Image (cartoon, rainbow, N blue to C red; front, side, top):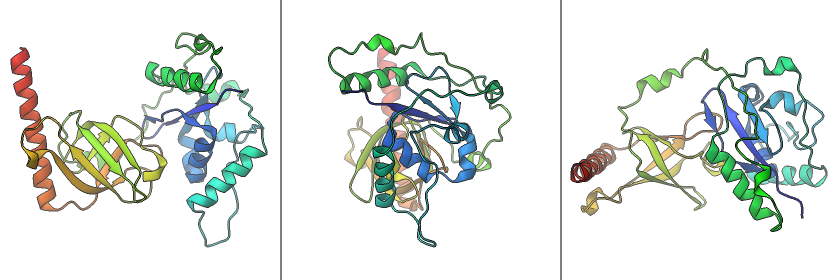
Length: 274
């Protein structure tokens, strides 16, 4: 059995790096991108020595992905249409990961790198897809050359400056899609208007409204244990950020009480250990 190939994407505008995804998932992601967005993405896959500009890679003679497909106008491709097209592409092409780029394509490399957790996750996923003879040392942090990217001149999103005050709390956040799928993560920071999560949000939650439940597992007060709202993802590309959609004043008060209770519990815990 051949090993499964995994891909990692980096959005140079939002500075977010995706979790490793399969070739099929990567193709769906590419189909969902608007052409102007592709210029800001970089891609890396198993066996590559460096990150590649996504647009340059798609315009090369690679056989893994197609970047465009035609659908009747004004109809837009639905999830089933995209998946069917992806399946057809994958069944009629073979994996090819040897991609060469010119030196000019790498002039701006300066500060992006795969973190060790991502590399370890790729190793674990590939190990599960191979026979027991797979040598996990074939992919290690030390033998991956990680060029840097300099995005210091990128403009900051003006909307970010108008956010509610944020709390850097690692609190549980549960996303529930309209189809009943769930995604569980923890917040890096959270406010009364939204949250930045620790994990990249899956495709099921993009461009739609979904339920979000903020969960406080450390409270003794049931009224401060969870708050349910509607939310949407923030940004056009890969993202870890959600924005609460039209929360009521009562929902904001409940969330404020939950966060204050969580902070108080953490303070008491620290004072005991101190």
